[in-house]
Image 1: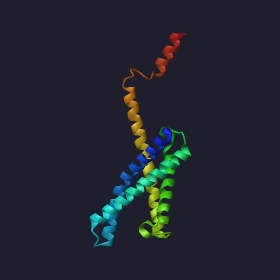
Image 2: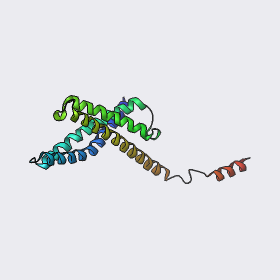
Image 3: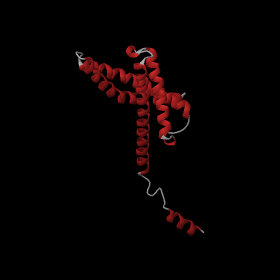
Image 4: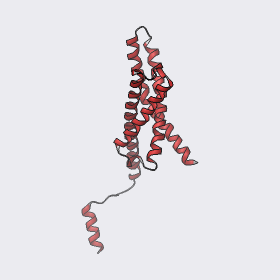
Length: 169
């Protein structure tokens, strides 16, 4: 049961991370849409788009985390290649885009706008997955550095190892 709670917490954590990354993209998209539409209060539409993209990022990150858990199982982040990780992120983004189009977000349906929404979600998913992996690896490296701070000499050079072997004989 504890393992499932950790996975749920991890999925929500990735979802929140994606939401934070997607919200500014939504705000910029809202500003562009407001300028194109004209006469619409830019602040209000930018805020609405930021919230909408933030929610989509939360859902997309959770979908990605679920796909990653099912597909990669017990592998750690340092065991996954960046292209494979990005592929899972793109798949999660595509699923999110199709879900958004099917649900009628922005009233698009299966049109050119719907295809654009699915395409953008796929790209955002791939980019967010790459960012997630880089953040996870950086955090892991920092943890390893902190743990290794107490170790005097954890690694021997090839020459030192050879000398130790010779002296042991």
